[in-house]
Structure formats: structure tokens, C-alpha cells
Image (tube, rainbow, N blue to C red; front, side):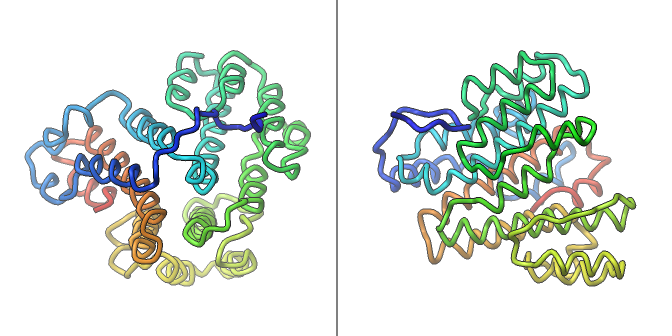
Length: 315
């Protein structure tokens, strides 16, 4: 009997890991490697391939490729990378609930779920159910198959004026990641650090209240609370530079989110030397994410926005 899962269950494949790596290396040839050359073009978006110019690039290109990668993984790889895809789909569920809360049309939810790895039953509930509470109940039921620590999400939501319990969902997820592979452990530690850094940065920039930070990163929550209390932005910058291999120039020329994603990619490159196959798959996924973000920015920009693109593109 197959285990219930938040994710869609694919027919088992016995493709060896090396086969998938070979396919990914071939598909990687489609990626843009010289973004600086594109920036020098009179019309940067004209350098994109017809595939990259497709509608809703950020929603379709990344999701479609991630769907394909997961479908090609053998049982062992699916288990190793389960947390990566699971985290992606949890974020998608929250995005769908936000759209529903905003009264968006069902068609927009269907589009967002087009290449989702969520199971069929949950997709149906998200697209057809109008009540946020009922959606949350369905999501909680699926999450409980992963860990009983997810229990109480719906009650929490009702007590907080139907506010989507994002922090509780993420914190529970990060505290219950069932993955022992060194590459994925380090990756998620950096993800948690990055989310906490961005949260703290927002308190400095836009006075957004941060009452708690996520658990499980390489930096204890107490460090972030201390920086927050002292309002020491320099300490936050130094901490970010240390974790994400950044230099001072990056904080001037790039957004904080780009510094973090660039750091994750640098870490993935290091993993290639010690864990070739697992490291390469993670490296490919991060390259895919960068390709998608950069391409989306180019499609929305014009030549007059080069300064904006230089700050926003991850090169």
C-alpha cells in the first residue's frame, strides 16, 4: 500500500542516478551563461530564446522543469530530495491561499497549479473550495502524514483572524526535515538563515514587526534577536557576508535576496567536489531558479532599465 503524501505519487522508475545527471547536463546547455553580454544589447530581451519568451515564464518554466526532474528520479533520489520539492509545494499552497484570500478567480489558481507536484485531491480542494478554513483543514490533514507536529494549524488560523499561519508552517517544516544527507542539511540551514536575515532586514528598512525567527539554521535565533534589539545593520551585513560568501561590493550593487541566492549557488559548487551526483542536482535546481528569475526580469524591462537590471540580475 502506497504511503499518503502531499506530493503526487509517480510510477516508480529505475533510471540510475547517472542517467538523470546526464540528462540535466544536456538540458543545462539551454541556460544563459553570459548575462553581462545580454545587458549590453540594445534590447536585452531580444537575446532570449523563444522558449524563454513564453508567457508567465516564472510560473511555467521553473515549475515545468522541476516537475520533469522529480518525475525522472528513482525511488532513492525522490527520498533524498523529498524535502526540496515538499518545501516548494508548501510555498505554493500558501501562495494559492493568498490568492483565494484576495478573491482571485479560480482560473488563476488553476494556472498556478498547472505543473504543481501536489496530489490530485489537494489541487481539487484548493481550486474549488472558497473557504480558507476548509482549505487549511485539507492542507493540515495532508501535512499530518509527514509529521504530527503540523497538528493545530487550522485552530491557529481561526484564533488569528484567519491569518494564514505561514511562520508556524515553515517553522514546523524546518524542525522536522527527515533528511540526513550533508548537502541537504547544509542547504536548508542556509535557507533558514536567509529567511531570518531577510525578515530582520525588513524590520530595519520598513519597520515591519518581527516577533519570531525560524529555528534550525546555523545561526541561533538569539543572535537575530540581539541584532534586532541593537538595530545594528552592520552586524547583519557582516553575518550575511559570512554565511553567504559575499563581499562588501555585493551589498552595494545587488539586492539582499540576490546575495543570498548567489551564496547558495556558491555553496552548491562546493558540494560538487564532495558529493558529485547529489551536489550536481542541487546545483542544477539553483541554476534553474536563477535562470527563471533573470529571464522574468528581462521580459519586464527595457534598455533604459539597465541600471535596475544590473542590481536585480544574478550574474
